[in-house]
Length: 259
Image 1 (cartoon, helix red, strand yellow):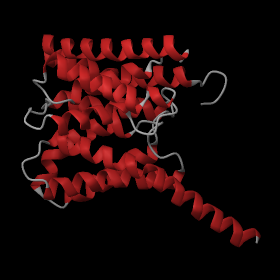
Image 2 (cartoon, rainbow, N blue to C red):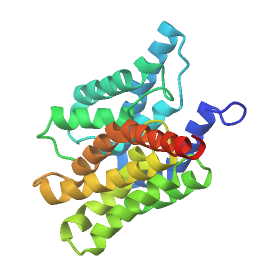
Image 3 (tube, helix red, strand yellow):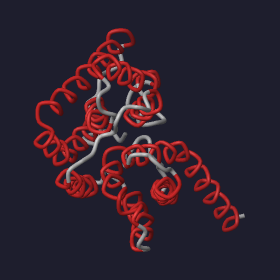
């Protein structure tokens, strides 16, 4: 992160602010159960940040709250206290804290947590979202893009890929599209785990949209959240490759131009 005002915690705070439309709308419609899930994920994430602060003098980050929010909203339902706590612990430690904290991690800890819980407990139902929660993802994306903390290239590339499939008229896309937008706002646009080069961001956003389309066509019986989270996970695995390809292309062009 850049020095001065734009340090790690400022970016995390702005990301939290941008997510508030989704979070507050989800809590409003989710009621006591949603509040309880969010409180649990926040507590578990906070405890692990505290442990690493005491053991390794590793400063805690507001980004832990971002991961807790995403897990509370997107993780399978009816997991119970123990299984949800184990999942949050695994994702927070294995995907974030062991790398030195947010900003040094390779994968989004929330994406890892939700994928772990989904594959570990496949019989549990996935959440469904009412329309106002989905619509609230749009101002969240807009606020993040306005402050420059979310990449417009990733957002636009994903929307283009999903839009082409949607206007093709296939009903499978129309079912998953709202959830895909929500996952785009919560997971895919993570400025740390996503691609960092200009071309890489275009490819990363398009890859997410492409995986969503692929799963919508081929993954029978899967829930929309399950397909969208899986697409986010696979796209994040390819993000370093997209950046490497973009850098290799840039070097090749420089060599041709300057010998």
